[in-house]
Length: 530
Image (cartoon, rainbow, N blue to C red; front, side, top):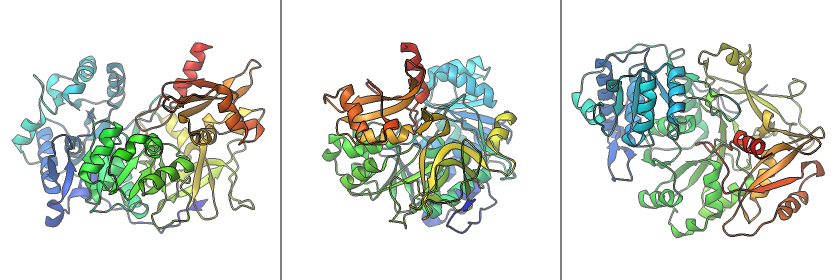
């Protein structure tokens, strides 16, 4: 077992609301919590807390209680914070939805989560209305924040200003949020995260992630995803930083918001790092206020990270986590300049890790002459590990062993300096003539090609039924690039068994909202065209 290099932190035995807002000082209450770039409107911490209390009181008056599950389908707007924390204030649970979901996908999650209330915005109401009708949720239980005929709206609910009830819960066991796992390797499952899970992960993250009250954070990562939920919505609020909300990603809007609102800290996914490293439009904007960029949700290759950092003159860091771990388990500490940017950093306080050989099941504990372990599946134990999968004791038992270790399915190495590097997912490793070929390694290499804008690699079968690496490549701009050039570029830089043996040019790489490559979509495409 490998322990965090940091001493354990004390995790407060508090609800999320009490942890974030109960001890708000007068000085903190006057600080700006949220900024809406579309209007320029600013919400102070004091006003936000008052709105949270008012929303909680309005819901309680309508019968929402500690055993209620509330669905939330909403882009990144300031009202998201009011609703999310208002529901948690009551002890009710929030299940969040991807804003791109179809009505059928929304319906499926509502039914699985057991949601009886739903909150959305008018732009997303058509799919939400279809789904909630199919689930039997009445219109007066469907709140449309910006207003729609026949539905409660946020302005009216806040205007009622009833006093929220006092709620007593056990933070260790009481369900707070119910996000759904990404589904990149299977059917999405409800991930049960307690108040303690969320509080612990913020408290742990404060040690590694140097986010301060003086920072302005551009909140482009979706709040409905656990990365945005914990690191932006909760960590930034705990640190009393200011959040500049973005409902959707557009590169020019992203850069314009940094320039106009003088953002200092960016939390991103790898596709944004690629844009910062390579896109010519970046040079048109003054983003010199940015001092730190933190990438997560998917592996970011070191060369792209270094190019982005050098170009915008900011520190680039990486972290790692999963929905099932609230999510952060590893991050590059701001005090450790010697850690390579290709690493996801060190384990957070209170976090214990194992590396386990995927084939033999043996624990890996030894370092080679270079001071690095051989690759193994990363197992994690700590207060941020979920309660389990909703109504899936079988899946829970498969994911969390008897000793409390969550089996991530991700392959990692550990250096003697204490930092981890993610190699790939166990199920995504390509086996060529018995050799393991990590797609992420080939993707990182191809991204270093000046005429490659984006890439994904999967295993496909050749005419002999042998699995071989295939690259789906997005060319940069009008650049002319041939299949042979792509394969030769890789062949010159890797061992023979790692060579890319097929190439297909595509317009875009399918990715989840959190930036993960949807390899299952590429596999489905391969089957359909076979």
